[in-house]
Image (cartoon, rainbow, N blue to C red; front, side):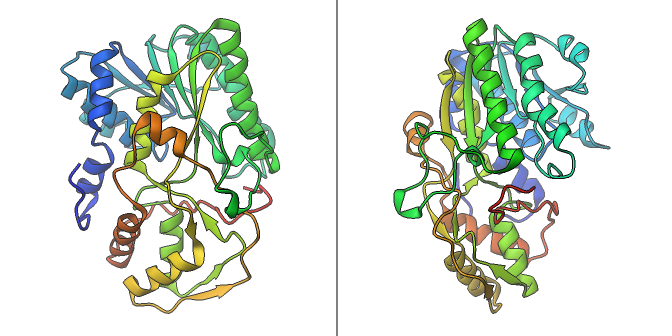
Length: 343
């Protein structure tokens, strides 16, 4: 990937987000078969599906890439234009899940976070019931299943972030339901021998959403920056996509668990001051940094799946240029500053 100084528009952004690494292309050469992406209509699904399509084409292998979602208005055509087949499906309808196309490679992206506080039962259904239906349908497939770093407890930054071997201690019902999702994949992996990789992600950054986007928009608007969650990890979404697809090769029974995030432990204060410089705006803070934060140690992932192509400094510059230039936002705040698990 040729990392540009700036990203001019959404066409270039989508190209970069979906550009596969050489290691993803090589993996597709080694492992034949179709790819099904469940919950493909979310924030990451389109670029990950397109990366799979581009990697398969670059590998010279003939296979279908199938995006499964309820699809918002107009989004289905985008997938089809990019060579990705689509299947409309309510994934909570187990009879519909049973009719989905078979494939040896499955990426599970379905889940619910925002609005969890008001509709706890739906959150649990999406995050903890649905994996059981998927595992029954795809018991003979390799499954890369997205989870979250929120299954870990808040930790002291001096400890370097939570490791995959640390015991989960989820805070709030959203995080609890995500641990439930992991346990369902673990149970059915043990029961059926299904090969699974569990991807504990925090936080992916597209220039249209992400923690850095949240902070840049606050700086640009002159809003107070809450310092209680004093630091965070983030990763360029294109790198997260590549690591997720690569993880299919590492799927095992019992599941292979891996943290996916950037290597840098970023200070909210320092990042905002840098954004203030780039945006030529004063920065105002409120509160003080807490002693703990949601942080992950991603070294295991880098060793197995390869290092990220975009570092935090470049990502901060891209975000500042994008937001400062009036680039489109999805208006989907991450709420990364939430310490009590209320989403």
